[in-house]
Image (cartoon, rainbow, N blue to C red; front, top):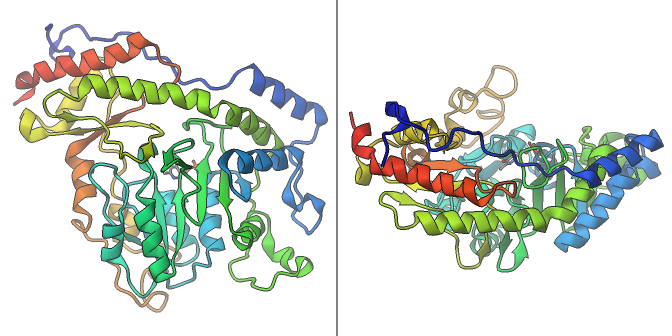
Length: 425
Ligand SMILES: Cc1ncc(COP(=O)(O)O)c(C=O)c1O
């Protein structure tokens, strides 16, 4: 095969790949209808009929409940807000510990800090990249109050085991399903597998409204607390007659009517946008699975993967070349491939220096917290290995790609694999 582009050869792909476009005439029409009303948000931050938002926000929530088969959907202006509200609703308090994955977008962990609690990191499974009942058990302590699982890249965590463990220790489980709308576990939707689930509608996700999120729960009390935290709860609890007002200091996590109208249209398309992802991923897996040194995503038998990203395991020993060099060569061939995903969260300066609020160690050190959380390098070896050596991923599984685009991905990987000897230096 021809010379590597990295060494001056012709790249496999000269043109950019198509962008993932989900917005069509339906969304444009829906937005114009909102603009024509002149009311872009229907919220009031007081105990009034508008406390729950405008007509499109409420419509979206009823549609979300029906689609996902849950009692309550609470829309918010991002999954970050949703995660923060979920931690507050769960009753997490100063000094508590919240177990979370270190291999995720940072907001999965910062919700704990918002309530002056301390994130404790459990390692991930090397195949699904999710935290597991076993790794959670290893970091449980009498201070543990909640677990936040992340369905990374769209693969749900092992919820049978995690919910059983949580029941044993009376813990609240929050499912960060930001990357997994439409994914399933034993036929149940990701996002609905824990006590509270959080979806993202940001512009990178399978369905989107620019910025937005939806929190779901089957628990009436959690739902009420989520609504209060979303919308200035402290001035509402009196008139509403809420008994337990802990953690009900409110924010403005409200979604606008414009975003809700777009999200409603996007929800209708979820299946149509997800099926091509699954087909594209199946195609790539089929073509890549026999290649030396490359392992396409593993999917557990009980799972329907959401394929937010297509994550590949790379074996540097088998190939004799570091992953980063391999990715560099692929990028030179015109194939977008990314190395490592997120840095293990505990290695970020905030955790390393234990600097949250103010400069005195709040909430990581006494008198705020009496435990002994460990953020040293090495605490989650699988995560660190994935980040530094083994994991690479691409978003080239989305619904706007054609068969030729997927062929180019395979050709690019094939070509670089055939030339790995040239990359050894
Ligand atoms: C796993 C995960 N959790 C949370 C978020 C936060 O989502 P948002 O951007 O809607 O706040 C993201 C966004 O990328 C994510 O991937």
